[in-house]
Image 1 (cartoon, chains in turn yellow, brown):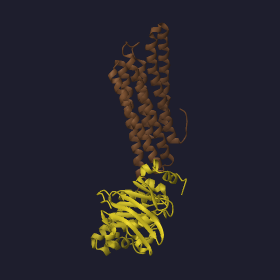
Image 2 (cartoon, each protein chain N blue to C red):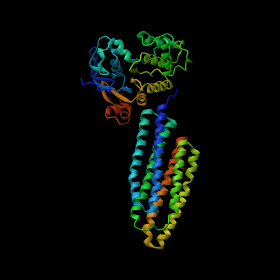
Image 3 (cartoon, chains in turn yellow, brown):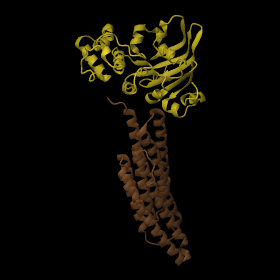
Image 4 (spheres, rainbow over the protein chains, first blue to last red):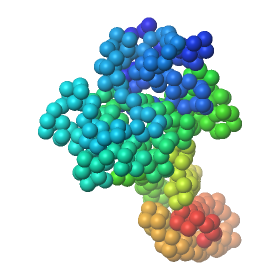
Length: 254
Length: 217
């Protein structure tokens, strides 16, 4: 495989992925730049979520699956990482907010505490900083003892993002993070993503292509397990190179 | 926390481009009259060359408008602002073409003295410049009332044009040897008259942006 350029955060080359005998991804080669938002779009079953989950080896948990090809994080093979370290560096935010049935404080503290990242009053400061970062601190009036379940869905999702940030990752993967949220909560998450982009590399899977257009810098269009087109969002949504991309984004297929 | 900072940023960028185009058009009109007064072919050529920069900026506005529509899904007044901005950029670019057209006339005219001292033509240009400036200001402020008032000033330009037309016809009737020089000046006045019409179009766009209605002013 060609050496990763310094400018790539994640480099994927010739990735094939199988669920048993069923091939879900076909020869995907794609480079994800740092401190940018990369959106993966395509119809249901096109492989975008499978691809996302390959990036932090979440698919390893599914029996009878197999990946071929190379995935590098900062030039190092992700299969050479210890799994805990890999997932600390590449966090994942799920479709449905899934806070622990505990206080807001404990939700954010759990990761750094178990990894020994921060302790004591430093941990409290870190939690405050994170909750401010996701614009939750003021909304809860600084009371982190509140149960996470008392928050609205949009707030819960931002809490989950704070929880992901708590272990100081480089990359944040988001698997349809707004599909359970109303339009205003969605726009808030999108604004937060743009804000986080200055420090983190974000990869988002979304079935909502308008969201991809609004929020991302780069967009990759998947179709039947293949990568059809990958480029800047501006270009892909105004002058796509492939007819299939044009047909999909203008609602003629899919 | 806000929920639309990016869209606001993009809309501001669009408006900044329009202000930049306005500056360039103001300068083009100014210099075209200056070139005409002094029969300055060098300055005239410069105006013609600079027109290319205005054309480029106009395409930049259109391109940005298309990208915002495609990526930000603007609605209601945001959508109208973008559509209006794209139209206004085109109107101003065409005004610059009229100014370049005046500059182009200076080149064949410069071998002969002016038919008459320039009085009404610079006045037309001055009114057009004032109208352009306040029209763009009304657009930036979203002031539909001001837009309507400014558009009414186009009558002043039209009256001056009619006056110039009558005067030049007299020169032509008096002595057919004046026809060429009079026709050139008539074209200049016509260019300025068209600039006035395009300013009115800008105000119609401001009205559309604010009210959502298309109305001829």
